[in-house]
Length: 134
Image 1 (cartoon, rainbow, N blue to C red):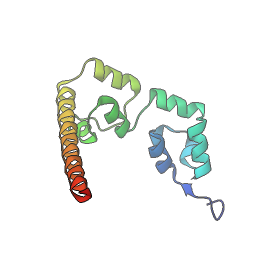
Image 2: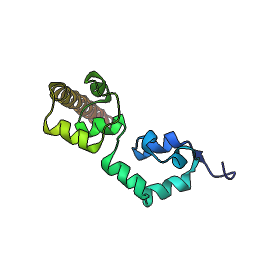
Image 3: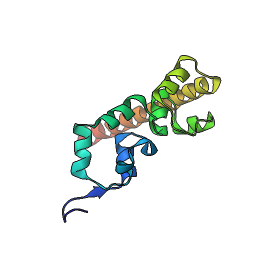
Image 4: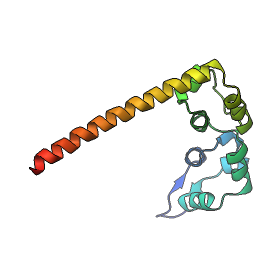
């Protein structure tokens, strides 16, 4: 820490928060300790290397999963264990393999069920609130 009231983060934490693949970052970033002010600066005015990483990758698995509209577990079941570039993700989306089609369908069903459960809970909460108000 640089001062008593300045918090710092490890490069892995910052990379995760920025949605970038740590091994693809410059070595000086990987070796540094980033303060919250430095992190805010990276978000507000990203350097060229950060903008390029976000644009072309390689992207970490959570970002790959989001772009492919599947879960991280779905990526693993599909055999995708490494980071992918934007071009590789685009190629998968243009000619989706069978595993991707199946995982996207599964992911959509899980999201639909989660939304149904949430809506049901909201209705119960609203009903309880109305009963308490009466």
